[in-house]
Length: 110
Image 1 (cartoon, rainbow, N blue to C red):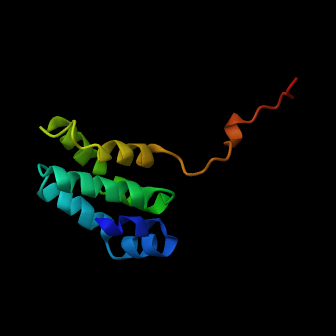
Image 2: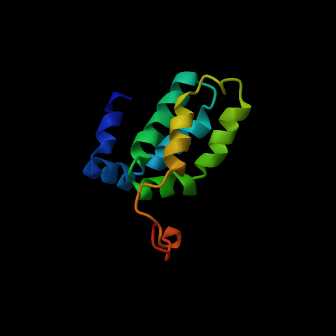
Image 3: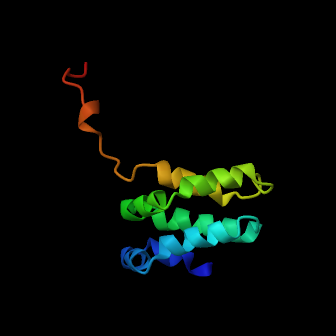
């Protein structure tokens, strides 16, 4: 999984998406959910790929990564799969730091 860092490049992330990368990762997780090294590697790929990329986040969510995360938490390796927490944080964090219009107040600051 040494090539995970290349997914932070926009072109590489797009290629990962177009070539079915999210589906491949989810398929691997579904096939072998007990191998600790494999679990950590796959969730690391999910975290890196989804960082700053809403399209990849949506792909993982549509592929039901949440169900796989819950499966990990029910399994014997739940406390050893540290990368799952990074994946959760990235998938649930907004990449847009702008203030939402609904949060803007009409009253002036004093």
